[in-house]
Image 1 (cartoon, helix red, strand yellow):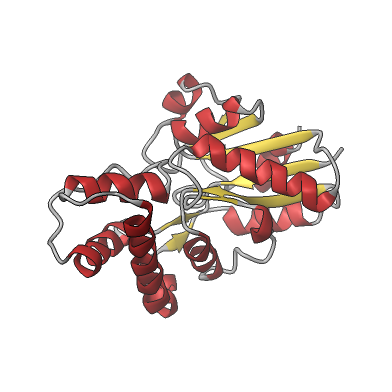
Image 2 (cartoon, helix red, strand yellow):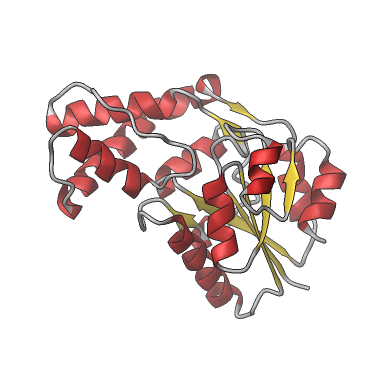
Length: 227
């Protein structure tokens, strides 16, 4: 059975708490020349959704052109911080082990559904050596759409095209109800991981098929993802 596993990044595999907020404040200063007065809620959101809310809240139109300028500023800031990322965040318990374990299964393809821009996604995982087992070409990224379910759709379509197969099992893993809802929208198996702002109970109530406290028990997590 061919299985496609689609990982969220922030607070599922890594924790860079506070870094995104600083990047947004600096990007706003670069693009609009004003100080930050409003901070959107980040968990589970896509970069395009956040950028549009952020610009509007500070009195600027959220045209595609301005959003792309904002993305360019974020990318430049990430590039600047790239050497320091290992000290600015941490890999969450079990992340390296489960990615490595799934990479030994010939029928499993691992990619991403993340609110991050593609470059930011790569940098964040690379900082802790978590990028080796991820196929970045077929991921769904936050630059695509305001709506997370569009990211899941894109990742599945690209995976099917690249591998010339319909995956019998697609699993979406994340730490927020937004991740769960996006997976459920496309009929995937959804796994909630309570390593972010939401509890096991809240993720279960959002409809997750399975909820985990964290990824630390590699064999148990692998069993859930490959069930």
